[in-house]
Length: 152
Image (cartoon, rainbow, N blue to C red; front, side, top):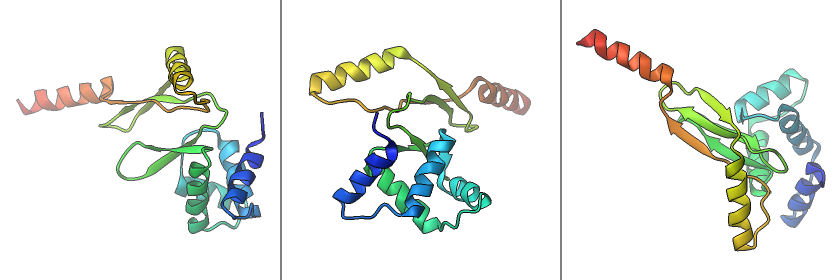
């Protein structure tokens, strides 16, 4: 498989942009993290490791990485956008509680099979997917039921 830095370099070159050391550092930090992240959280981690990176550079690079198909946005709540590395990775499928923000990851091979079938039918080559279910977790439902019982 082609290294992500090469894929990102090619994308940037196609856009007449440069693969700067800052962009390389951001990509490496995302690869090392290999889980869902927030831009501000990524910036704090990088700064704690001694990288001099601005908020604007983080956000611009995240946008470029999304456009290149390397990461995808995963909006879990209205407060903060979350992102995840998708290119060449096992998909992270999730159930998200809309009351608590709790995230439960799961693996469903039938989703992979569906992705491959749909792409094959359209003549596409799949590189990843994201499947999210929004609902109310058992814990949030129990808390709501207890609150309702108290108010009766």
